[in-house]
Image 1: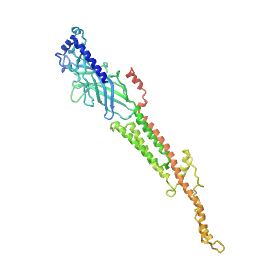
Image 2 (image 1 turned 180 degrees about the horizontal axis):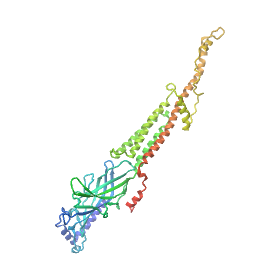
Image 3 (image 1 turned 60 degrees about the vertical axis):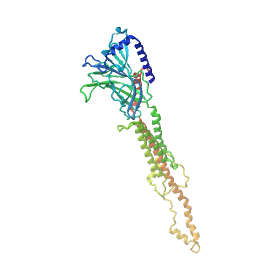
Image 4 (image 1 turned 60 degrees about the horizontal axis):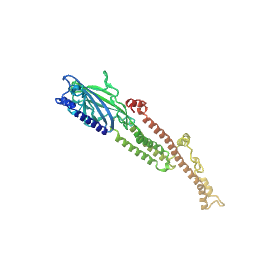
Amino acid sequence: MNARLQIYVAAMDVRVKQIEANPDAKRLYDDLLSNYNRLIRPVSNNTDTLTVYLRLKMSQLLEMNLKNQVMTTNLWVEQKWIDYKLRWDPEEYGGVEMLYVPSEHIWLPDIVLYNNADGNYEVTLMTKATLKYTGEVIWRPPAIYKSSCEINVLYFPFDEQSCTMKFGSWTYNGFQVDLKHMDQVAGSNLVAVGIDLTEFYLSVEWDILAVPATRNEEYYPCCTEPYSDITFNLTMRRKTLFYTVNLIIPCVGITFLTVLVFYLPSDSGEKVTLCSSILVSLTVFFLLLAEIIPPTSLAVPLLGKYLLFTMIIVSLSIWVTVCVLNVHFRSPSTHEMPPWVKKIFLVWMPKVLMLRRPRYSASGAYDDNQESGYVNDGDFRSLLYAGDHGTIDPLDLAVKILEPQLQKLPKLESNLQYVVEDWKYISMVLDRLFLWVFFLACLGGTFGIILQAPSLYDQQMQPRQQQLFPNI
């Protein structure tokens, strides 16, 4: 853009030099500006209203700073008015019908951007003005404006922003300078396409949807006279490819990693570690989001809602994982398994979840009615008085007493191990149950939150672009 500006200024200088080389143009310049007072409003009667026509020509949308809520644009501020003191008869000046003069030498309407964000209210470069023999003055200065813009982050990054640029005279009231749009028709203050986009460089981040302009008359507390202004409304929609690739897809991927926590075996000892790592990753994304969006309490951005939902899901998964691990490492010496737990988690739930229990090589299942393994008094007395003389050797007695117990010991150990395996199988059933619960929760939350953005359902994007950019 700077190269184009330099070429334009150089061309203007060449044309001015050509005119200055013309003695008629030089004489015209001297006659027009010799007694000209640039501080006086160019009207024949002080009560007359001078009409100034205004239009913007946007060449580039430089930046939309969400953090500071500032929009930076590169514009050409086209202004046109009639100066009765700058009229001449072309026949008296060798047929010269147009003259280029420095804008500092003539009266200029002090049109400024009211909602300026950096303190620079005026144009960037004081270019030359074009004078016509009819008294018409055309001035097209370039300017880089930083305007304040109220950012709505509710649907970020699938958001639309509407920013305004309010132009008006800083000094003259509506009775002295009447500001109108160049394309404004009689009886209407609204112009559908108020900004010229014929030479607009397409933005890599935003799509322009609408650029209407509205003429307003406002009364301020300082004065009784109305002040006219033209408000340009720039409606934009964010191009979501960058944020989809760099924020949304990684967040969705990290979210569904939570489901894999319940597929990881409890014996691995890494379930809680995986959950904690996922939570830390989401915290990093949340801090990154906080650096992008403005610190507002009016709305929570769409991506922020999704990150909060994901963090809640991961936190719940940590709590559930701890409970499942507690069940996994239970044993008969610490917990007794209630009958309803056996019925629900060993009979019903495996069928619903289509789980098949791994084979266990124990000789038999745990039996509540199994023998206790202890010798009663009758058995002991029968052993004590057995034999030829009603007595028995103490060593033989000990062997006969302990032999049944030793025979039952492997079965007792097997039954205890079988109960331990029951607890492990219940933890496996719980893992599979919560795997499906969290998978459905992540899936429903992802689509339920992301699909809230209304811009995803707008089908008018292409027709709007064709209306604003007919040459594209």
